[in-house]
Image 1 (cartoon, rainbow, N blue to C red):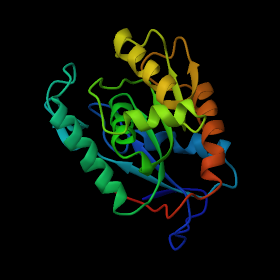
Image 2 (cartoon, helix red, strand yellow):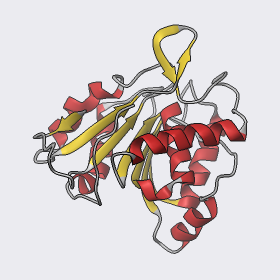
Image 3 (cartoon, rainbow, N blue to C red):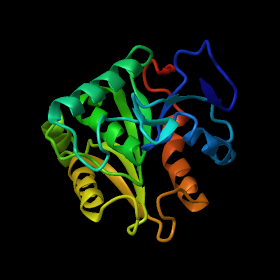
Length: 223
């Protein structure tokens, strides 16, 4: 477990930020951005939970994937569901709700949790990634809530020419987020499949109100 700000391990109401890395990375990947995030968030004390993907990748001993099989192929629906439910269960052991941030394939994992277990998601940050198009149980509920002005707050940041994410995949994710969440959209031409300081600043501005107030019994999870 890591912290933004002063550690408050005995404070059950401290907000939690869940970090989900991209394909071939590991739970330490996004942690490297925390000093920059902290610089933009003075006075914030929040648990940071960086979860490791459940499946190894063949080309890197320390690299992991959120879903089994070839990253270029959408898994069968039952595998998508099983992975998202497993991830949700890991977090639900320790928290009622959290802010979820996913990069690349981690964005897909975070969105799938939202689509299956929306009660666990206080807000969503989706970066340089995609979403599977397999229908999920909470899709209709999310659409109704969004149409009524009660959509889950979301942030989607990307480079429109991201070389790692096919255009159709990012377009589907954007359409889904527009129809099922209260999404803020930002583009960062030239950043490629990565993060820039301007993007981190925008993400932090989005995160600030959620990390400055607690929402339920947010606590840390690790897996």
